[in-house]
Amino acid sequence: MCTSCLTRRSLLTGAVAAAPMALSGCDSVAMLVSARTANAMGAEAWAEINARTQVSTNATYQKTLRRTSAKLLQAAGKSTDGWQIEVFADPRANAFALPGGRIGVYEGMFDVIANEDQLAAIVGHEIGHLSAKHAEERMGAEIVKSTGLRLIAMLLNFGDVSYANEIAAALGLGIEVGLLLPFSRDQELEADAAGLVLMDEAGYRPREAVDLWRRMEAASDRRPPEFLATHPAPRSRIAQIEAMIEAGI
Image (cartoon, rainbow, N blue to C red; front, side, top):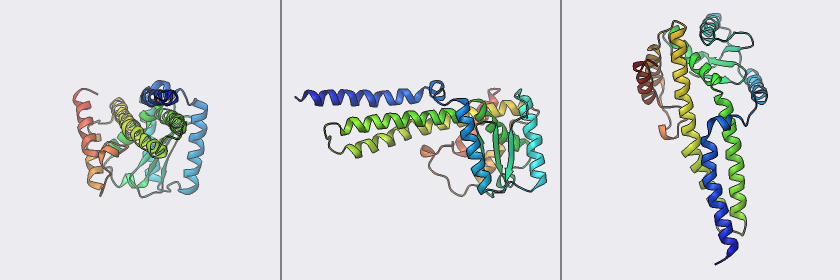
């Protein structure tokens, strides 16, 4: 038997086994991206969004968002100084958070929410993402994934292994579906839990988060299958949030 083939197979097996373990360590993965780097990337992304999407001129939306955000940040023990929180003139029902204390809410979200408590559920969720450094975790995971797949591709091509590119592509799909996307869903649920706590401490009604997601479900025409979704599907999310509330968050 070819000794080099055994060596190559051993290296490949080790690389494939090591990639999931590296991706599963959230704390260590987040450490791959410094706060300075994350903040710079957040600032760049924020500038790009501002360049292509106008800030909303709806004074009521902006005032409501700032009031809600201030109460939630105070509950989190954070100052509002340095935070950039805006409503954007986009009809989609969505919101986002970027490193460096940047939160955007689209005008379309105000067509879905029924009250300020539900807006607090959205903003509290985004603050939860930032407090837990989820963006840094995601970027770190992408770094590990990219580095790991380059190593695997190199090992597959070493010695002219048949169908090397196809195997590498299959490994990429396996890592993404099996680790990166579930990792993202876990982040979403963690941010939901943090948001519920902030809502309660800021004087909002956490149970309004349940009605928010029922309204989101009703407003959604189509969703990708939950297995490949980066966010839990509304029905699953509602069940998780109800369980958190029943458990006292």
